[in-house]
Image (cartoon, rainbow, N blue to C red):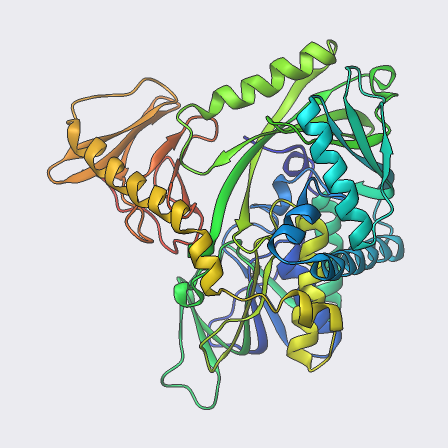
Length: 499
């Protein structure tokens, strides 16, 4: 599966990886968070390197819908429930600063974006009540949302909530602009460099040795911008719920899209996200939704097919041309976790838990992290990100972790219940018993792959994702290709081969 953005990504020059090099800051992960943080540090005069295991933007950034919006579903009412209205106001302030910074950058560097109103809509009475609650939360948090009884959508709604003056863009065009400015300020971007861990014991002072499969570099500061942080020492994996959702880009005629001059998101389940885009002179309708917890959906291709069915029902002439999915992390605290890792004397920082709203949260996090590293102050950030991994976070995830433990047990039992003589059909994968260990067998493009079905992170038994043709971990969201190559963490190494 390849997103519209990946299929039309601009060229992005990179730099060679030089083992033994020393930097002021090393950033792990070349999405919006990582590149933006590195750029802000490089502008201050720091020697900065960004290390990306795959290509820049290959994980979440290149698979979003590209909405740059402060109206974020039921995010504000959720924050108020978990905390209070003051915290929600700090969240809006941070996201507004992130949005403003990003749009100013686009203006200054000639990066195209579209201004559009953001609209949350409901199709049920209960959804309308949820909209009313979110409207009240928005007003408390300082967002001037407008309640409406109808929309320009081609189906009936029971209510709508609109926030004027939001934006949308091609996220990889934005990322390429950020990366170019990073390199113009002396920063480096190296792709194909997977960080596997760090060493600190034998180095002078507080320097950190960053270990990769291609050698090591050292840094005064280490910023983990990898979705779930790849170092378990922060414990973030225990308070994040990995979610996967799907998107389809449809080729469409301008006449069919004329009414869609806004960005839409449903309040009711299953989620439906809609926006338009013009890329290389062609018009597209982008429809997303059907999210689920990673590794816990038995037939993911059916979710993609459902998006196509729903879209054709309402936009009959639309033709699907690109399919993709994205992974996001829902925080137990309802707020992103941003800042220095706790219980460490070294300067290791992270940003995670954007809950599907990364375009504004990522830049807000970059502003906060760079200010913290450089000794600056941002009052909204010190208050917003004061929520660390705390006991209440752990308690709120007991149920989720209990489910994860049951998933682990069921996975082992299920894998041990079948022998490896079973062969799946094309495009499918199963977990079978090979001695005392679960083994994953899949067939992709006529080739049979056999890998260990045990996640190298914390031992979860993997499940097959038939939409992405990947092995996904139901515990903490690590994902692997059909042949076992790591796609995203918190795991840091590939699957062991089968036999």
